[in-house]
Image (cartoon, rainbow, N blue to C red; front, top):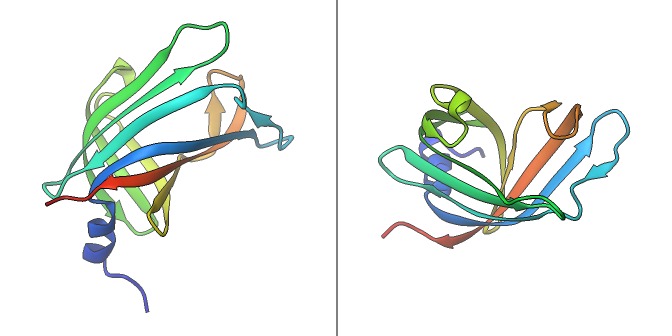
Length: 136
């Protein structure tokens, strides 16, 4: 038995805390950013809005913040964020598409395999979030 689109969207609702990030080079399988501390939150609201903020702290580098606000919806096995505003100006007006998987009170979001501007190689990433609050 599969979940209906409405049931899937209800699973997203609430606030989630970032508990893990994995990044690996597709060509070699080499794990990247193992020494980077990343913290953050993502929230999905019943009115179809979402916001995310992630702090990245790499040894010897300044803290980097990734954040944006968007409308969101589910399309099959993907969640789509239609970005309204972003700290990275080129993201404004784009669609940030993520694969998703639920594991208990965890949500795993996976951006598409893509060229990584930080590492200069093609990488696969996944972000694991733990639910901290559900809507009232």
